[in-house]
Every structure is written in structure tokens, then in C-alpha cells.
Length: 278
Image (cartoon, rainbow, N blue to C red; front, top):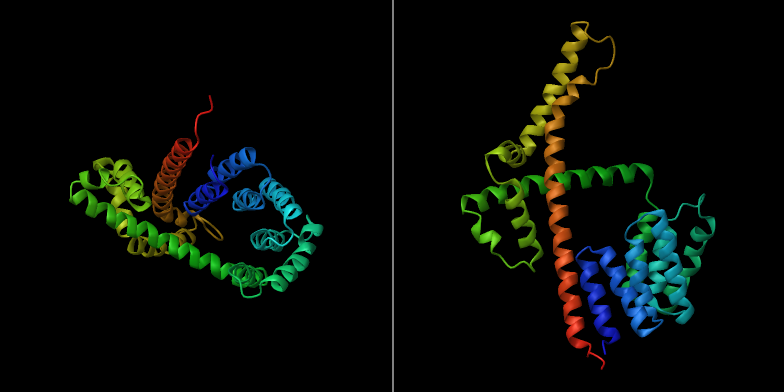
């Protein structure tokens, strides 16, 4: 019979791979097989909470509460539920937002030096951030995302220069290799050469596009084509944004394939462990 540790390991691996739906399926499968378990309710809740959507937040709260009903001192449940409550809108969910204080206090009483307490402290710092700091963090994340596009484009060029076959034949269980293989498959060929070029030189192209946008808007105003603020010049930025979306879509599809493959392999391992009843 599959043990609780096996289900927890499956959930952890799927969660680290970004497979939130797969985590929920594995946790629910464990609950169906083993009955109510605080650890599995914790994984089920985390799989919902990671989606950061209202419907999933409601289901996450149900799972957190079900787990805490079994073990009111479960550190993972306390920390996860407190994080969920911290990010709740006080206007839409006043009760949920108020519960964050009690949950945080309980966790710090039980294990103030634990990893869960440290994680919750980081979440509390994020919750105290002001509007301008949120904007600054969003700008930083945008810069990082643009760097990913350029990095993946250059890696793609190197893989194509090497023929691409080595990447396609790489270990499919390696997440990075899976992303590279999917990128080669999706963006190879002369038709995608402009996409690869723009991605490889994204920083320069972005700066040039911004300059062209400003010059175009200025010319439109000077010639009387537009009388006030013009947005037409910003169309120069569209190709770069489309390239970002293309690379992001390829990465997302590759990661989804990887999670599906991982879930299948973990489920197959579970089937081998579970004896067939006669």
C-alpha cells in the first residue's frame, strides 16, 4: 500500500515543478486512499493557494481549516493559512484578513525559529509594502523577464548552431533540458529568424524602439497630424512585446509538458508500489 510519505513526496516534487493542478490531484488521491491527513490537506491547500485566484483561495481555506481541525498545531497549515489570510482583501474578505494575526501568533508561539516562521515573516514584510514599492518590484520583475527572453534566445542560437539534435535527445526529465528542447522545436527554421534576432538583441532593440517611439510622436505633433498626446509612436514597441510573449508561451508550454511527464512517472511509480488485489 502506498504510504503517506510517498504521497507527500509526489506533492512536493510536483509543487517544485510548478504543477499546482497536479499537486491537488496527488493530494486528493492520497486523501481518498488514506483518509483525512493533515499533511495532505496542507498540500491540497497549497496547490489551490498558489493559483492566487478567488475561487482557489476559497478552496484553499477549506483545505487549511480541514487540516487544522485534525491538527491545530501543524506548522505548515498554520503558515500557509496565515499567508493566505495576509494577502486577502480586507474589504472583500474581512474575516479571512483578521485571522492572519491569530494564526501568525500561534505559529510563533509554537516554533519561532522554524522555517515556516521565517517564511511567514517574509510574507508579512511583503504585506506591509506600500504602493510605490509594489510598482518598483513590478518593474524589477519586468526587467528580469526581459532578461529571460534574451538569455533563452542566445541559448537557442547556440543550440541551433550545434544542430539542435543533442538538445532534442536530452533527458526529458530534466526541466531545463525540456524547456530548451521545446524552444528549439518551436522557434527553429527561417520563418522564426526575426523572432530569434529580436530576442537575441532585445535590450538594444527595446532602446531603439523607445527612441523611435518618442521621435515619431514628436513628429506627429509638429506636423499637426495629432494635436495633443500621441500614442501611435509606441507601436514601435509592439514587435519586442510580441517576441517576449512568444518566448514566454514556449516556456510555459514546455513547463506544462514537463509537469505532465513528471506526474505520469510519479503515478506509474505509485502503481508499481500498490499491489493488485485479487
